[in-house]
Length: 473
Image 1 (tube, helix red, strand yellow):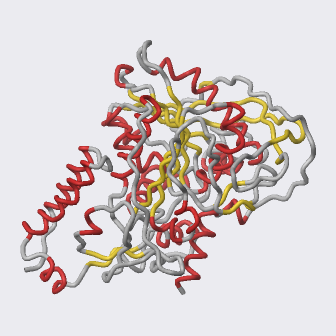
Image 2 (cartoon, rainbow, N blue to C red):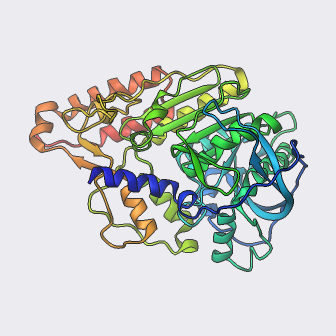
Image 3 (cartoon, rainbow, N blue to C red):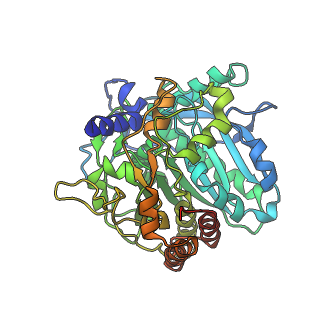
């Protein structure tokens, strides 16, 4: 059963990339691409699809939607794409006209903008635009004054926008997701032109590409094949990447367990939860380097309760989402505090050249599975205090929906993992008092802070959470 569920998670995470692949015959083209400047055009008044305006006001942020349009080029592979990541391209066919949307969230006060723009390739696996990178870094974004831009780069994004609001997005068109790489490149040009107006005149602007899950799989391809040509981004943040890179020709997957090229000129921060690591063992061998840091989050799940609730907040009405009900309680581990630290570290890596700390990898059994302790929690990796001072065991592949067989509900429950509270007798044997539990918890949280894996805000959040724990005595 566990193998079936692992396979299901992989299929769910890859979703449309594997299940709606389009077969197109490649044709030869010119060896060089033209990267033309594009401009962000005003969108219609009113509420954008997947808007978070209601959440942003209290944080002093504003949200604006723009249109991005131009001529986008499709590509074919030029030569073999080997596992060294040195992937070459040649143009295929004629450029195609496109128009899509770009969603901007930024500080209302220009003095708060720190100059860093996170440009997220919006994820389409669930049938609507998922801003997964925003979800796990939002608190850090708002606290430190980042700007965030979501790009609806794929044909599936445009399809979902038209379904949610046909009138608003009547002119939007992306004929095929083979053109998405070029669109994401164009977005960087347009954003780099617009972003200086969002802050003070003396604030330098840096662009960080961002992708969650399947969007991170698109970024594998973008980093290896497109970034060396255009130098569009100053760094990248990949969260929960599925273990495959998306092909440029036909949008199918034939590059599994991809590696990032070692000659990259810009930093890459890659954060994987235990759930992705469980189905992408070779990625655990990704070596840290002077341009790459790879963190594995013990106990972390691909789409936890925090992300589920954030999706419902932004997209429930637009996508007509059913609130998931699962067989077991889903994981509420606050792994996003590691994302806050990772983003902060990437920012300073880009600006000052100081690399983030190296994190230990999850431990493995002799046959390659993640090794668990006696309570069923993963060993090794980057660990919240909840893993070393446990009150629950955190499972990966033992959950499912009770209220619907729909794709969204199934994904939310399966990819949310489980959290099973420990028996009262076990808790009493481990922690003679609430104070003893808190002190043990604080010791681990303090070390994470001193080692650079927590921001002070994340440290305070964890300690506040630990203070509220009341154990049976």
